[in-house]
Image (cartoon, rainbow, N blue to C red):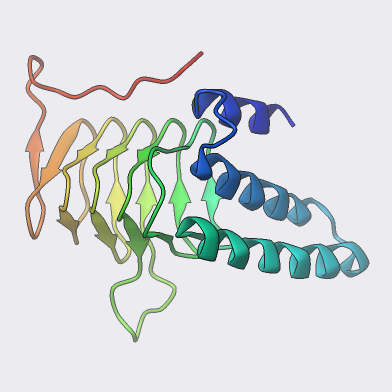
Length: 177
């Protein structure tokens, strides 16, 4: 329950933050994994799939049912956000509209990104395939990331290239305590 309160605060306690509602549906659905009994997991999973589909249609946010999302995840703007079923996301990550975190090849449908902590993902960015995004990384708007990005870098361009952050020009991801 604490993680849901953190999510609400992270979305500025705004009951109209559609990203919060999509995340809430994900969190409640993911909670089913704590139970071993199929008598609990199966009906809960079916309800979650329906709610997740509704969120996808209503908000334009699709979060796979098996995604692993850390604390204080922020969906800054809603619309056209796709998060593959096997993505792993660290703490204090921010994403914006038009972001895709997904697989890259039909012959490798389970390949999905692993996103570190304190990552700032710009609008329209695509992170595709089994790539690792380090901690304290900024992904530029409309960047297409197809390769690993080391810690404390910026990834910009199509295809994205990693550029070390300069101390005076680095963007910072701010989180609420």
